[in-house]
Image (tube, rainbow, N blue to C red):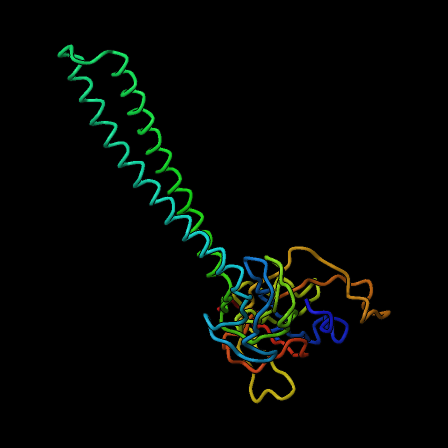
Length: 279
């Protein structure tokens, strides 16, 4: 929860309730997505700005590709060299295999000595081992190339969801660490209304219940649904302590607007009307 939301209006307590409904005060809160790179690198460019709306898949920022590109070129060269080494080893194997079989035939015909055949056999076995080693070297080089390609692909970071850019923590020229947020994003569906009801009103608030949100500047009530009802009581937040309320227990409730385009801003105070019956 953003720090600037809290003290302003921790609202609470039902302000009165008619038959089948509960009235309360609340505020708008958001669940932010922190967007981080998967690799460490120097930020080359930030392609958005705070307050901008971005679509899913839109480029947000880019890390300097220089180092990753150099690693990829090195890995490509190692693959090419490993393939060339394997070709040479396979040629040597074919040659040693022919010589081994030739010496086998000569020994059977008593034309060549067993010692010569043993030498040919050792050369054949050595060439076979060289080919196996070459194949493993190619596998390792290709795995390194795959990793280098992945590192290169991670230099451009895209929006994981549509939403509004809230804060940008790093700027071009700064080094961003893997897993450390560079910016935060607020998808419209991640906004919610938080409010509190007194213990006696809790049985009337059900998951899925319909709610209506009104606020200063809202032209009409905004429909919402209750998505969370706390199982644990808490004391009235200190910001609104009074002789009448400080000893009363309340329960935290959350509702999400049905219309993702509803004009609700984080920290905005609202009034909530909750229907008694789930819909």
